[in-house]
Image 1: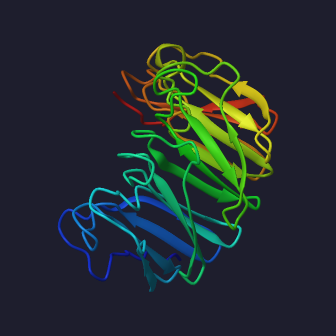
Image 2 (image 1 turned 135 degrees about the vertical axis):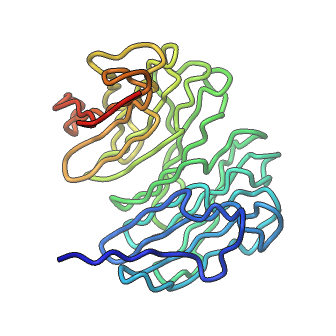
Image 3 (image 1 turned 120 degrees about the vertical axis):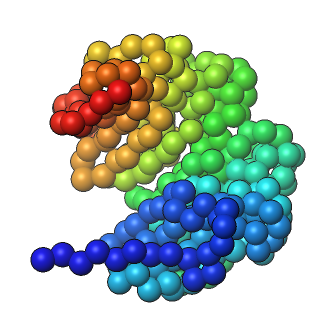
Amino acid sequence: GSTEVKITASDGASGDYFGIYGSLNENYIVVGAYGDDDNGSFSGSAYLFNFDGFQKVKLLPSDGAASDYFGISTSIGSGRVVVGAYGDDDKGSASGSAYIFDLDGNYVAKIFASDGAADDNYGYSVAAGSNRIVVGARFDDDNGTSSGSIYIYDINGNYIAKATPSDGSANANFGECVAVGSGRIVAGAYGDSLYKGAAYIFDLNGNELKKITASDGASYDYFGEAVAVGSGRIIVSAPKDDDNGSASGSAYIFDLEGNQVAKILASDGVT
């Protein structure tokens, strides 16, 4: 048999958006609540649970402020919990930041882009694994308006590299989602090529290895809106793919070199 456990925040309240983003490792689950108001309206929080549903600790930034959206993204891996706060203002309005904690909820470091600027949305996505922390800044403008970028750190928050696609373009939103595992970093760019979308594979030092796209991709499929990597596989979503009706959606599986292994669909998918 199996046991189902429902987890809720011990101090949950209306409009907290608990569960908007979650992540887990072999021992713990971290769940964001970006609408929590402990440090002001939409300052945000995150919660760490064990697999029995016991709340271990509530995570808050020491410098949290209204509209930081702390908890919009979460990740747990390599002994670290990472929480994004894309609305933080250290480098300008909504320039963004991320916070690193250990597995007991102790603060390790706050990270933000040294070249951050207003509306970069650094921290909209975060990932931890393979002894790396990766943070996406989907609206960074290095390759055009909202072309996007990612930043790579060690597990203590020491900067390693900034990465952008070799063919980055305006409105690609590269870094909207990030993943790290199996010795690879993957970042999605769902706005690439008129929202046909793409994802990029990097090594752990930020060197681009390959750009991947859907073998049957079409405009407005949004391939690359979500990515995952682990157990020797990369998965990329295409939520607006139309195989089972308009925006029924699909996902694509690749090996770590970027070769497409399979396309998967919901057996009962509909518009």
